Image (cartoon, rainbow, N blue to C red; front, side, top):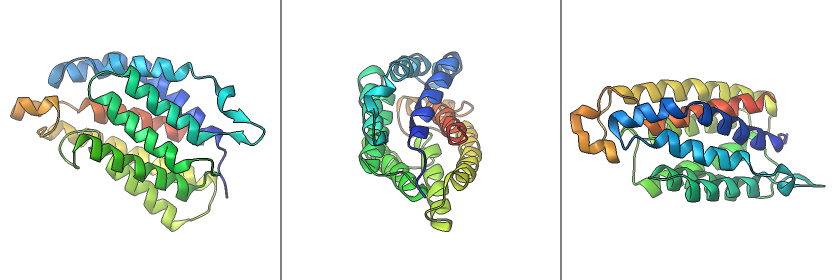
Length: 218
């Protein structure tokens, strides 16, 4: 059963709103172990995403979620400074390319998230437990993929259940970065001193995942 393609648009709009609202929080995390600009950069990208005209991606066939996500990815690459722009940009570009013009169901959505994570890891040369956004996205991608394997072809209610589980996983994994020592990115220069603060990229990832769950509920 195909899912409403517009939920992708609602996801990005919700994520943009939440990232702007959490600008100071994300900046405070990054000030402790990074360059102190993650919240500012993510809010800048979010404002550009919020300005995308939905009509540009809507036709008689419906909302073109694949092309829209590619646009989101390009905006993040060009508007978000530091490492986060290219990383998040790659994630959404890969998602958009995987979804393409196809009707979205849970297996395709899961496949798109897995593709995004593969791009994220390749671009950042990062693996799980190195205190980066991969620490959140990789377990979340597995969570959604396992739900798709259990209930292939099911509709929005199953997606809601899968994403509710993903939100729980995202929260758990983001909180787990607090006690980890960073071995990738700017925070890795701090060594042991990077312990005690949530990774900013993990925190923004958690915010984005919360937003996709809300979007699935309309």
